[in-house]
Image 1: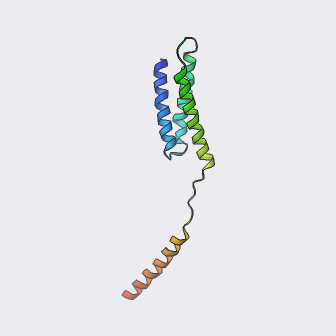
Image 2 (image 1 turned 90 degrees about the horizontal axis):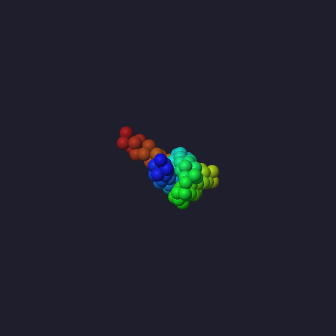
Image 3 (image 1 turned 45 degrees about the horizontal axis):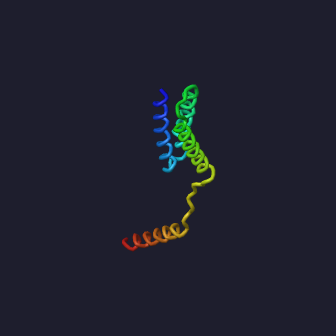
Length: 106
C-alpha cells in the first residue's frame, strides 16, 4: 500500500513539475498538492514500522517547492501585453494607402 502511494505521489510530482515549467497558470497546483498530500500520507503509513522515509520526504520537498513556484509566479508575474504604437501607426497608414488605391481603381 505504501509503495503504491509513493509511486502515485511521484507521478503527480513529475506532472506538477512539468505543469510548473510550462505556462499552465495555477493548474499546476492540483498535481503538486496531490503529491504533497500523498507523500505525507505515505510517511504516516510508515510511522509504526522501520521503513525508510527518505523518498516521501524528497517528494514533499519537491512538490512544496513547485507549489511555491506556482504561487509566486501567479502573484508576482504580471502577464500584460504592451500596446505597440509603431504597429498601430503602420496599420492606420496602410489603411489610408489601401483606401487611396481603391479610389484610384474607380
